[in-house]
Image 1 (cartoon, rainbow over the protein chains, first blue to last red):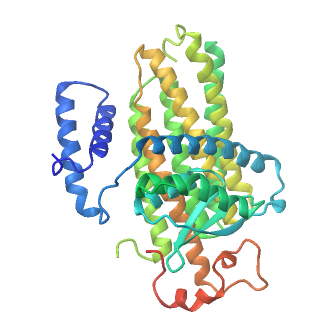
Image 2 (spheres, chains in turn green, cyan, orange; image 1 turned 30 degrees about the vertical axis):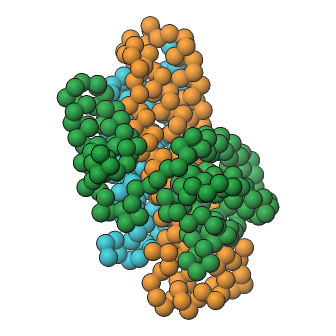
Image 3 (cartoon, each protein chain N blue to C red; image 1 turned 135 degrees about the horizontal axis):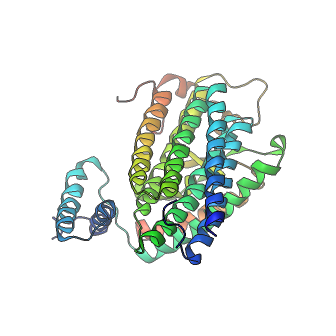
Length: 167
Length: 92
Length: 136
């Protein structure tokens, strides 16, 4: 069972995607979708050198995603306001560096996804020698606030979820 | 209410169309290559939105598949262009 | 415009609002792409088109088709899932391409506020110009 289904959550998502694509719950589609959901992760396994993600706390992940989507909508309206009403010369667009402790590649991928989905921040890269994240902020007021927010609100839960460390 | 909905739909179509025009301006003006890639990517996204809106306008589900394909092809082409800008080659 | 007359109010009212909001936000994102002065600022403009603009229009489409077909139509979730996974990657790669291209040039003189050199500093110059770009 473990060998056939290395990551049940991934297989479930693939099956759901297949059913959505076909818009039906027929037995034929269920069968074909299940086959696909079992075979696709096995075939794509060699493409992922770090293996499939281990999620230690699914509930915490859901909570994190909920918090992140609220943040996305909030900063969407902020960016809209800035584009429409602020003078472009008064903008303080800056690169900032944030020291990270999160090591798990899947956790870093989720962090990159959240940060890039949030309008107003773009992830540039992680400096290999110092493990610092370079981030571009659209309208920077206070670099300290950004560092505290990203470390406290996103990095801490991600370390719990993907590395199983309690705070 | 139907009239209002149809007005809103045409307003949104016009908004997305004007947005595509803005993207085209940026695509033509440049000034750097990454600006053009960014404008092209936004143009793909706007095209996807336009397809979805036309699907609502004509009440047809076929447009949904078109929108999905446009999102897919747009993603692949933008990744290839960005990779080319970064490394000077796509597959190393 | 087929059989829109028997649309219930619970579908048409939120769909109207979502369509108007989505259109305005999509337009604002493209406006930001056109009028902001630097590339590093321009990259933040389309982000709102992709997140909230797309989300609003997809939700309106879901509501309207569910009401028209009188069954839940949720296959728009596929586009949501796809955009959610690809949009961050696209913006990150374009940003990286821009930063690496800038760092291949000599630093601006006099120093400019928006330059990527501010974050990287000078000790990395020789390393960057010599070997392949880092972070790969």
